[in-house]
Length: 165
Ligand SMILES: [Zn+2]
Ligand SMILES: [Zn+2]
Image (cartoon, rainbow, N blue to C red; front, side, top):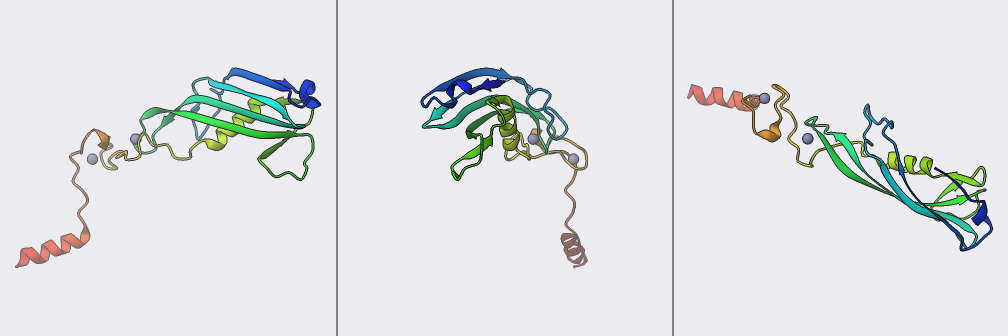
């Protein structure tokens, strides 16, 4: 969604609120598209004493695949944006500055980048997911499989010694 900022550019106190649904279902991330549900975006651009500030919140449910057990799960994603929109870089270092090329700003672009930045590189259905057995592929969250654990080679030597006695 593109906002036309011309009416608040020179109008301290002016604000342009926005609220809409953003479709990012085509956004591919590590081989699949996790943003399967529409993203609810709301916020505003305001002229705060001559500085344009964009604040927004984006909420959705991400559909993920667990790295360990390969199960699909969803988790809420809440992203906050707090950006300064400027037509040129000045000395101020507070917050992230977005350079405006015209009197408009593409809110969807900014929200999309923020969501990508917050995307976890690891996806686990739970912190203590047991994963799959590397031998038989059983989901160990549902209980132990019948594979025997690999014998510890040091124990094997010890057993041989004990058996000799
Ligand atoms: Zn898992
Ligand atoms: Zn197994």
